[in-house]
Length: 282
Image (cartoon, rainbow, N blue to C red; front, side):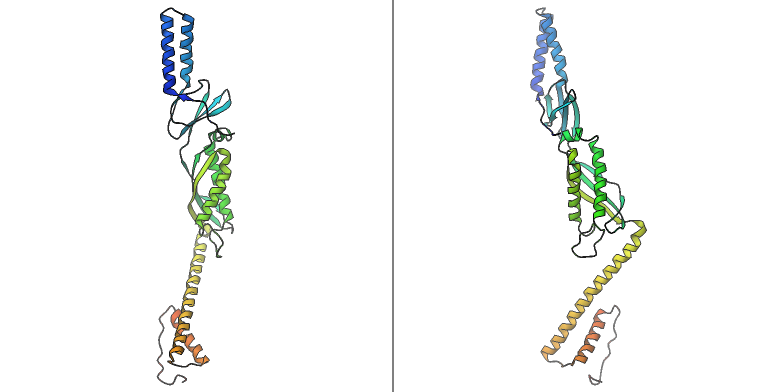
């Protein structure tokens, strides 16, 4: 089923024709010139009056003629069409679907709570009316199904660089969700304008354990950065001493100096300096 344009005329123009027929019918009847012709004119006016319609902006009328789809009228305003057609009003405005918070397992098997907001609109009225039972309910069901499929495809959080996750790559995730939704909703003549994750969290039963793991990972990452920075500072200190000729150290004393500097730079607590008043080797 594909949408096609239906026959229509300017409503005001046909209203003038209707008034002309009405006036001609009344003159023929009351002027006793032709009673039969006057009755025919009045009957035509009454039948054709059912063909008038009014369409608001971002609205469409889907027309059927004795059960057969004959077209869609999208142009807003006052119009006239075949008075024997059936009409179904359809909104073309942009709509939002806010899903419930769904509990599902992610790619790592961890239970998470996820929700999304889907922005959509009808672009093919014939598909929306005739190819599905209720296109609005169809969007709701297919959106929740796509959200579940998305959540099971990605982990909540990635522990490896370059591996996309629900929390680490939101733009990629929502684009994947939009594409999957568009594929599912194509049959209903619906265009998905935007898809956004509105809620994302671990399920309550594992939230505390996952929080502790995230904290541990943050501590490890911070420690790694601190150690790398301290090593760089120690290297610069040794190179500076050698280049400026301040002191010459053998390998054993260099190791001791490196040890002392790393302890001073990496330690969380305050270090207590020890002043050596004797020989460097005593």
